[in-house]
Image 1 (spheres, rainbow, N blue to C red):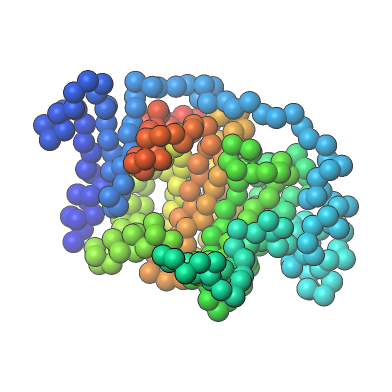
Image 2: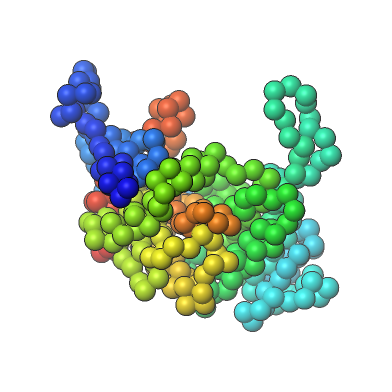
Length: 348
């Protein structure tokens, strides 16, 4: 069965392939996802230097208007969890804490809400159900996640784990999405560093596709990816528990994936040492990206499920536009090959 995974992984198509005799402008190389039927275009002729991706940054905003800054706690919904000194403060005291390290509250503009009935009887409409929280992950208005100390990154991962576990065991929740948007091009509406958690009643289609592929292969395809990429030119760095790679199939230039070296499904499965190693590698990945691309806007996302999956974290700099081709086909144009990106990130 291993051959199936290897064949899926190695498939690429390009102008030298007689099956694809494109005319006119030649598509230089199409790469297939490791095990899904998804493709990207590696456009080497569009090769750009890291400095070409620098995105204009807005002027520093006024901290006096920021609802996430210390002293402005009354401008957000009441906190559901507050962390201070590395530990969570009891719920009945949480909203009175001022010298917090990380603060969690409901999102004022929640994407997932609860309503008793669907809005329409046409097609498929589910009753509104879900939860959406914001984690203010630093007191410093101007800090980015790449600036966090190792201890603070470990605390942030502890918060992620706690909120994941809380919603994993909430009735009706089937997927817990953890992510960070940083910078306006990433979708962030506030400068102050924050993360988000959205608990949904469905398993997203992309994860269903991945689970189906893993079940069909009868072995973990992500374990196969981790094993193979650990010896490839796309490896950026690694530690005892995790590897950092530029994935063979990428959706954005300088995209990075963090994969555990052993099979783990979600944050709850991690040992204390694996948590520490993940904090170190995530911090390292963000630092490399900040140095190489001059602190770009970015998203990072945790992909995890309670079982039958392989947790992975994807970091995507928001330095190119999603345009007509991507929206109409789902095929992404990447102007820097993952191999070149990995080489540059290793040196950052």
